[in-house]
Image 1 (spheres, rainbow, N blue to C red):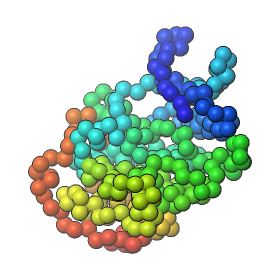
Image 2 (image 1 turned 180 degrees about the vertical axis):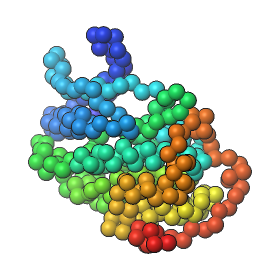
Image 3 (image 1 turned 90 degrees about the horizontal axis):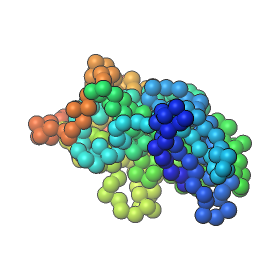
Length: 306
């Protein structure tokens, strides 16, 4: 849909410049353009330390293609990190996800549902000797006025169209991306946390797209301690409370998820700057430790009562 260039402005300052590619057919040109322009407007609305900012956007006078300009970030996304090192130390995984909670909570406060939360959209920017999580890519975002934002066939998100990344998408979004709220992003971030803790997404064993959609919509995620027995039960319970299939039973917001994680590991750990040198694989000593088994919960309120 688009491509990103390293660019300089007239003063010589460096930026990342994202622009829309010319569509292969005219059929989807208007929708692509509307979605890209909406992404630019959405990103320009959110001002938060844990969201990649848009510093400028418009339409190129020569090509008539829309563009948006963002700061160039030094670092890597979480997907690249997990591909390289596998499972992270639980406290490090939690600290990174708590930062993502803050950025997504800011988006939700602006009436924006991201709809594509996944490790590759969580960028770990190098800042001195530590990293700062930046939520990126609002190209699939849904806004409160989505019903009135039309493409060539009506609303940008048509009922029944699959949108998102299958391994991280919520059950309700797998059925209809049009009718989701912030709890869908909660599920996707919890699935990203599952991946960071276990070194693999919950349904990685499913090889087909339709099989994956069936698993996500018909069963709860496999117990994380079956894959990563070293994960502390306090964290495991929160992960599964945020991955419940029914939205009304799931963790209701990013702020509640962050608070629960703060409580599980201690705020001194969850809010401490994450040192770049700490972004390594979970230690062999930790791997060899089998933590007490966490009991599954059927609702977020049940978890809070425990």
